[in-house]
Image (cartoon, rainbow, N blue to C red; front, side, top):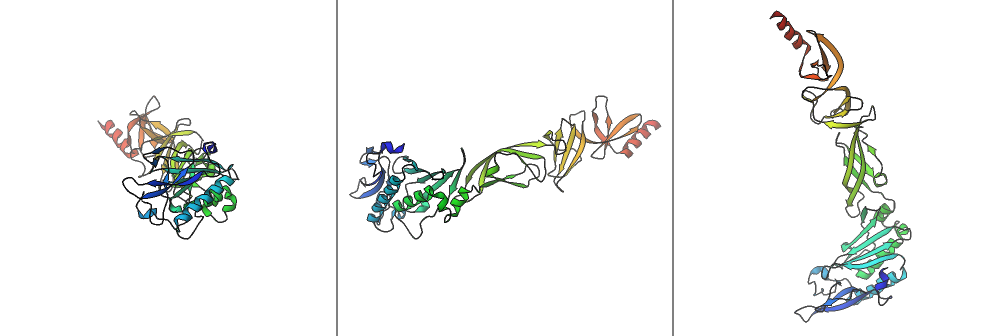
Length: 355
């Protein structure tokens, strides 16, 4: 537990004053017990505190504090009282990275056993710079937007203490914080653009472990869905990964996508082979429909969709394909590459007879 590093259990956070190198000025920093290393008079792990006239350590407008410097220091006392009051809910406190780019991290477990992480970068001047994430499962975190205080700049200790209280009592806090309600209810989702019909599938975070059939084309099935990050406060989560399989809606057999078929289809059409049932599926984007054919292969290894209708011309059997062309059947259950209309075949054999 993080408490083991504390020297004074009632004061995990404290304010220290650090001289600015090459200047007579000094600035105030927030420190955490257990992080005691100092190099050239500067603590290696600390965060510059906002001050009324600006912190000379960070001489920028964003280092100015609301209220007074005394109010900032008193607010750290309030923060300590919250931490000490709920030791079983504060799972870890640490400072990562070195000064002046340190980050304060506070891990909170709520009374309803949900896990949260509060991260504060080197800018400690308003709640806009406090990041809150909640752990949804083993690998997905939701970025929350929690505004627990309103009205100007508030001393940082008050802000952090209020955040911690809101997260510990998350179910009660939901009444006033909409994004926390979204987290408690897990109202998160992502979207997949179907690789077959290009329509959108909306996937709830409650259903990411299920397999989802595209309701439009009914061919594509999506599984192993991994959600990424959301924008703070938003319920839409980015899509990191998914697996897709193609299944014949008629037979339930797995299919393999193939390239286009010459002289057939329009832009955006897709073709699939069901090798178990020897079927060719032609998905037509215009009209969102699927045509089913017997699959046949020509001498060059190209697939065709047979209508299973034959004619005999010149003593040879020709089978009609979905293109409307007839291909000569060969002895090994394949067809010739070249296709002809019925009129072309009759004209061709008529000429042969005349010769």
